[in-house]
Each structure stands twice: as C-alpha cells, then as structure tokens.
Length: 552
Image (cartoon, rainbow, N blue to C red; front, side, top):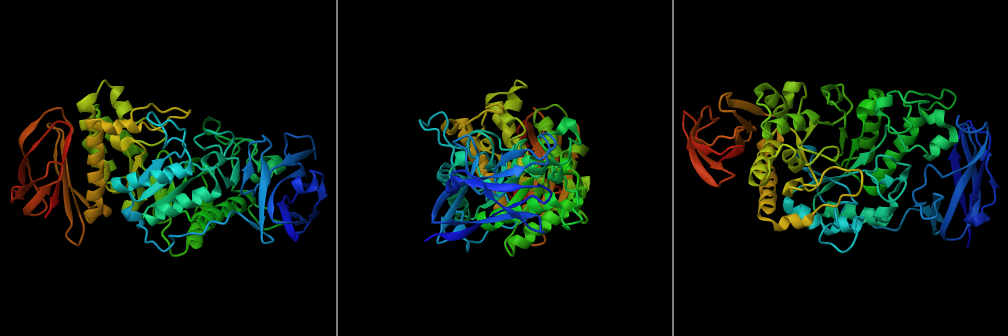
C-alpha cells in the first residue's frame, strides 16, 4: 500500500523548485517553499527503489538568471552513476526511507584510545588485486579479505582515503561530488558498513578522510546557489582543488551558516550511519577557520558520544596552534617528521637539533603525544623505497635504512601512520592513476623481513606503554659518529631506549652513557640482553641501524 514520502530541498533564495523522478515519469511535481527555506512535496510510493532529481531555478552566477537546471539531491545517500545522469536513489521499506537493512554486529567491542593508535592509510581501490591476482578487486569486501593481514601486522586503526561519491570509477577521492553517498565503484552502503563492522570486531578503528575545504566543480550545491555555500572565487589560486566552502557566510534571516549547516549534517550522518571513529580534515590550512573547526569537532564528539573519536588536521606545514589548548583539533599531520627523517636515513644531512625537534614534537610547541601523527610517507608522497632508489640506494642497503626509519617512526613521540605497502617495501612511484599494491613482494626475503620488522615494532609499541606518552629524554648525541640516543618512559616503569646510527660506519663496541636505569635491558632488534651499569652500556651498532632496548 502506498505511503506518503516527503521530498525536500533547502534552497532559501531560489525562486522555484520541482521534483522529477521515475515515479512521475520524470514530469515536474511542484514543490512549495516554507519560511525555513525548504521546498517540500509529498509523493505516495510503494516499497521499492526509485530514482529522482530536482529541477531548480538556479541562482548560480554561471547560469542565466533563474535558469531551470536539473540538480541531484545534495543529501542523496545513493547515486546511479551508470546512466551518466547522477540520479539520486531513494529506497522505501515499510513506508519509510531507508539507506539499507544492515544490522551492526560488533558495536560492543572495545576500541583503542587515541594515544594507543597505530594508523594504516589505504586506498580502497588499490589495496587489493595486483600483479598475482586475475581479478580487479578494489572493493570494500576485498579490504575485508585483507583484515587478517592487517591484524597480523598489528595496526589498530585504518584511515580510508576519501570514500564519498566522486565522478567516474577511479580517483584518489579528493574531488567529492556527493557528500552523503559512498563511492559506488567500491561497493554498496551495506558493503562499507560490513567493512567497518569487521574492523571493529578486530579492535580496529576506522578513520575517514573528510574533504571539507572544497567540493568537485559540479557538486549539487554549486548548481543551486553557488555563492550561498561557496566563496565566489578561489582565495588561494595556487592551492585550489574546487569550489571552496564559505564558512564565514552567515544568513541573518534564517540564523544559519549555510556551509557549516551542510557539512555538520554530513559529519553527523557518517558517524550515526557508518559508525566511523575519526576524521582527517584535508587541506585544513586552506579552510583557515578555527571557529568552524572548533564547532565541527564539537559536533563529532557530541554525535560519537562515549566512543573515542579522533579529529586530525592536514595542515601543511604543521602548526601547534591547531591542536593546543585553544586549538580545535586533536591531532595534526606532522609533515616535518617525514622530511627530516627521510633526509637523515638517505644520508643527506645530520642535524641533531632538527632531528630532535621531530622526534619530540614538544620542542616544536605541541603539547601531547596525540597532537601529532608521524609518518615516513603517505598518499601525497613517494614510498621510501622510491626515495632511496632516486638516490641510488638499493637492495640490502635500502631495506636497512627503511628499518631505521621504521624504528624512529614507532618510537618517536606521536601517533604513527603507515601508508599501505610501506611495511614490506612497496616500490611503485606515486601517480594519479590506479596503482595496485604488489602483494607478490611478500614472497621475497628482504620484503618479508621488513614486514616482520614492522610487525615487531607495532607489537613493541603496544606492549611498551612508555611509547604512548609524551615523555622523552635525549640521553646521548655524537655529532662526529652521527649517533642519537633517546629514552622513552612512563610513571609505571615502562622504559625504552633507542640508539640510532645515521652513518655508513659500523660502530664496534660503542659506548652509550646515561642509561636511565641499571639492570637488564633486552635489545629488541637482535634479541639479546645487556646489563646497564653506572656508565651505561657497550654495544655494536651497524651502519644506518637503530638498537632498541627495553627494560626488563
């Protein structure tokens, strides 16, 4: 039996809006405008799936005045891209709109706190398939097939590159067109929920890459009334990726900030509907509005309730102001960590002060361990193996230096992030086209050795809670030998000392003074014990190698 289903569109300063759809043979159904700025109409519909759009008299400056244009519902949760028309899909069940019928299974599972996170960044389309796979894969369900691998590695959070609907079948996702719809080439809404649910079952949090600086050029709001939601033109033409949301614009008549209203609704939707556990805010420097960021972060915390929720800014270059006492965010991508550590493992420099600054971000003005997300690479940068190869460093030498970088990453103050494939030496150069992970590399001795090294480091981090804190002391530095040693500790007695050799020399019988306490220390990388006395320890350190000592 048909039930009345409401359709509405917020277009407060547009003259006219009509609804068209498969239920009306695509003929106009008039909509009435209320004082709240919404156009509304009701259609009697049986249960089922229907396609629809709005016809709007546009206020956007690139159309003729009040020109009628077809517009996809900005709040559409499913899109038919196959027809090339981007029709919205509405699903009716038991007389009401639904997204899908998925039933969550693992909401009761405990999830790690922010300071415990080891994040793994991945692109859904490129994380599966590859050289040894006859199938294209690249869907949510294929990421699920790899969750046992990620659990074995030990990570406890994945950061999904953007998964909102974008034009076409392949993109990095930083051109979102439909903010409530999931990327259809990756699978269904049900498939994404199952992926997140399976992550939670394994104690893995899911962080979403959120694009709130801009949208794709033909996103629905641009077609309705461009300058109501967006800046008229780019504020920074050299860093422009699409129409930029205007978070400063206030509608006094309706007492609302239109862009904030829209993005706030998208964020609440993704937390409530998909149970995500955090957001990375792309291009936070370009957003350049701490007032908006404070507000949106408060909205995420309020919506998430008692569950942990991590808000991280991509602000390049990083700034402590975005995370400190008056700052809006929980964390900030730590880009100087990448550049400094990379330069040191490549042998280009040995600058103790710069190195200490990125290993202990408090020296840069950050307050705590969760305020920075450290990485050796990410989707915006080349893999370490590519960087080393560009400097004619190959084979065993490259893997040795990659391990040194991994040791610094996992023991520095901050939350570590691994870019997919980095843990076993992925070598493919960065490119905007599809670049599947080469899983066959794990069959090679050097690659599998690097994987085991990373796996051990992640496990070490989880078991040595000194690494969760912001506590660090630099206990030894040797400019001539290019050695730096530091101690991590907590109040409960967890102690870790890292001794890093950034030279090509083998240091036999090297004396490391100022060990934080005497007794037995276990060297994790080579699995042996040493006794520390008042004068510290004596140890051999290979070229471009880190020794990691754990107090027993």
